[in-house]
Structures are given as C-alpha cells and as structure tokens.
Image 1 (tube, rainbow, N blue to C red):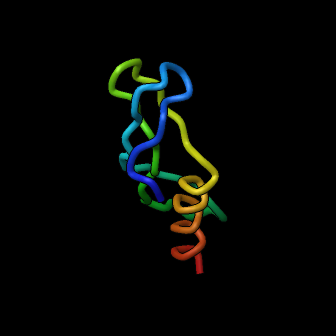
Image 2: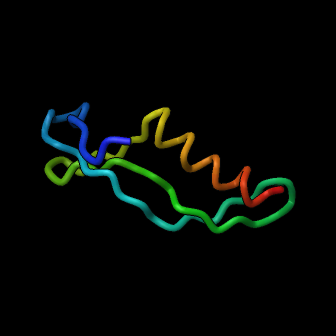
Length: 64
C-alpha cells in the first residue's frame, strides 16, 4: 500500500495514517486500526479499496 497519494480535493499529497477504531461485528467488539489517508493541506480524509481491505481483514482475522 502506498504511503502517499494525491489528494482528490486539492491534489497535494495525502499521507497514510492509522487511528484506533472500535467496531462491533458478530456481537463482538473489535479494537482495530483504521487505515486512512489524510491531506495536511485541506484536511480531506479518504480511504481506498486497498486500505479498506486492510482494515476489514483485521476484523476477519480476530473474528475467527
């Protein structure tokens, strides 16, 4: 996964960051990391299919 992407709002660089996320899935609370890109210029936050997959895979792994 790329560490930097062009921001879709201002075309500056957005940096991949993680932040804690508490998510309920199958009646269990999962503490995982959300992978999100944040633009330092315009403050836009966005994800990609790849970052969403990485986030969701944590729940699948912990849910077994």
